[in-house]
Length: 293
Length: 291
Image (cartoon, rainbow over all chains, first blue to last red; front, top):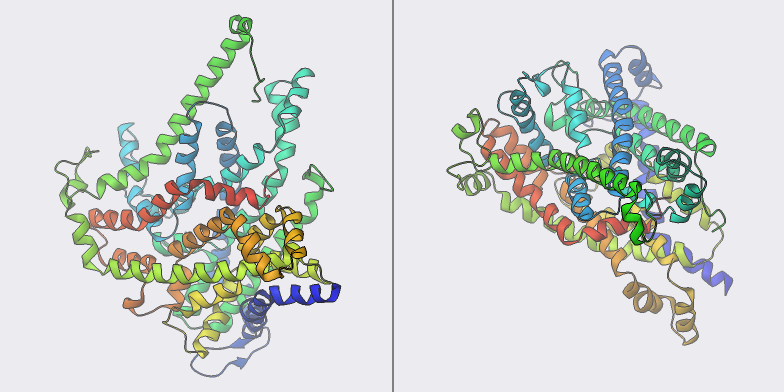
């Protein structure tokens, strides 16, 4: 009986196991092999050892630039997304009449993404006739040229993505609604202020949601591609040349599959390292209720 | 933040009640200002989609264009065959959803209910693939599908769905775990086999979770750009995202047309969102990613 159940388990998960080998494990190993070759898809791959990695780290200024762009974007966007997402979740967690309508409004943009989302925002950021500079002009401010200005383009992309803050907001909101009211009542009896309750009850109990949003935020922003590909195509002056955009160019425009694979592996290891560091240090700041449930 | 459950009459005369009212007023004000900021871009896009090239350039802008230029829609949507692109995308989405519902249900049932050595290892392995960066897969996948002769067909976008997707498996597994075991045990005693239990007990009870998977999957296919960009080349094969990108690169300055096309591309997700809002939120709750 036990053995039959085990066999049945492996039968059940076999589609995933096969898919894992075909679409995950195989490609990852293949990608590492490609990264050690010089390959243009047309001729057969030439083994070059670590040459692609050496070139990436020492001779490719544009790769370094694209890494910096991605890092700056991640380090600015992820904290903003967390702070804004948490603030909105706190506001929307009130028991007020009509709160459902507000939740809908803030959540809606996050289910829209992709090309239409970006094209819409390109129009918002249009220097002469876009929404943002029109609103600024009402206040007598001459807005910048946003996506066309190397100094502002990355900020514009950050603002564009923050419209989708509903994704992290809804996870915070689910976390908030899971906090038992009893805990606040106990805190009130002990004379806790609103401020105290937030820091001593709400925030510690939200740390699992915070961890989730932090990790997925970092993983997603490191892979930013579509927004930059559509809105700026890396410009102006490479100010929004994201790492994955540069990788895409190397692979599918310059047909340097080996070099692009090396870039992919470096990204893979960086994101893996970030995720591991966050996980390993999370024991110090993430609190789990109901351990043993 | 937490409200005490009941107030007696006298509480209304207390200063604390006035403080609460002022607090609520401030929250309402913040919510209203914020939601205006969130809605305004959509309104602006909608308004621009009814403007001629001349109206688009006017300053100060007309928030509600007069006259409304309805022709933007039929004109923009026939410049490139958007109907075709939409059908292509729907076709891919339908088959991908079918594939994911079939495979993920069976895989998730295994993870949720069957005991076997190595189960935890494979479960954690599956979860860790959710954190994989996609670019590391895309080149080998391109080469793999190229060898199979699948480039410029929908197979690369559909076939993997029949092998399950980690997030949907995880979502369904979490949901199945919460279905009382007694229901299954009763059926087992009645002589039902596991497959019968899955279809007759688990699936009917899991409709909200399956709906959430279908909706997330539709959203993923409808909004996806990188994979179609790499795998599809012929214009007649384009998805809605590729079509809109092509349209954008060809008709750059006609913002009225671009907004009309964008609104049409956004519309299905907006409609699904309003019809099935609770599934989006439940889908997140099912996974237990919260406090």
